[in-house]
Picture 1 (cartoon, one colour):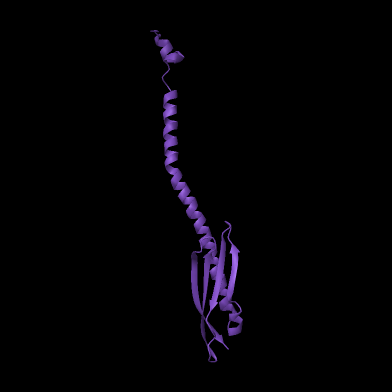
Picture 2 (picture 1 turned 90 degrees about the horizontal axis):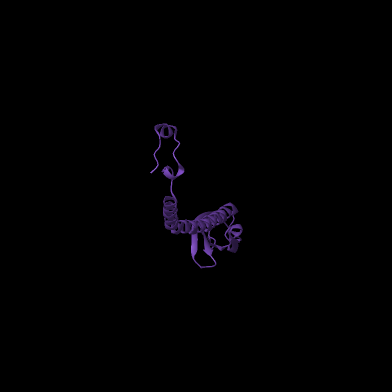
Length: 143
């Protein structure tokens, strides 16, 4: 073994072979392995979050389209003929490329001089056929 003088130890002049400070190669490899294992554990959570984000984009777009259509129905009053013009279907593509069909259904006009009609609007995904959003309102109309 090397013998170091007190002066060399005090001044920090130890040889590189005896320097135990810092991390060794094994410690670095083990820490990289632990980080890789933790990263793999979080991948399913990340994928699930991305799927939910995509579904929420479609839901938000459908909700906005239904609300806009209901607002158009309410603004079309007070004449029943103007409200009936809005009956029908229209297709819209959301930012993800999903086609959403908006269907507007309005009950028949009242037989008396004035009354209310029920208007309902439904958003449906065209790729799966699922109803995403459905809403209804009453509109005061005159004949």
